Length: 365
Image (cartoon, rainbow, N blue to C red; front, side, top):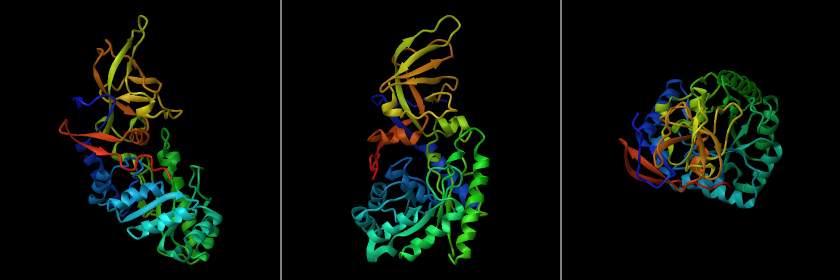
């Protein structure tokens, strides 16, 4: 594996467009083969060029987390957007949603009767212009109603004048060693209960949306109609460690420079510092993770400590890389790394070709 050395000042966030394209095509093909539609989560990349690539490859539209992200992608010509979040909408947010609805088919999440009523009141006579999906808790226990309570929320939303078009969930408990298969089963069970309750009450042609990157390739079309993975476009150290991608599938790395050495005691690994700290990698570390990130071309190495501008690498690979060496760091959680920079360097065939703006960076509301 030949390192990509961009010549950019480090730390630099680098996207390999060739690997990115393969990842986008592979997921689109996998989802289509199962009779599902793909609505990838753009909070991972926040980049207009990648969104257009996903849609050209067959995605039905995009998922986002905030109204601000929706505004960025709608302005770029995306015409079908789902805000997969239980929004609590005030009059200002309602006005923004209605402006969005002038340009795109807009769907938002709700998870309570109170949230649905507030959304309807804020939208007023235009309530039906923004469709809603009810969020279901399928085992991650973050937001979402238990499956047996979904009808109460849907009925309140419908009575308030909102168009209830479906349900959604996030099987986030798929993020763990060996956890994806059980999470997929939990997701299918919860959504089946919710769909049955809604159909018995007269709700028809429901959109049933779920999926995560760890679970996306295991989910079937028996209950789901739509998948919303995000991280698959890039891969990251978490997906690598969980076995959901290979090193050759990782499309985003942070190019860093070795700036300091710490030789180990006899028989112990040495350590060195790379100039890519938490302000570019993010600081996420799941309890099961073996480090704060990895080195793409040296799988045995681990980032064992992070501060703002320092990544401490434990190096069981013999002689330490020389000072000034440039290495490719794989962040643990790629969504955070992208949101920490204004642009990414884009390489094709190992050569820096262009730069892409992280257009939805910081659009957190």
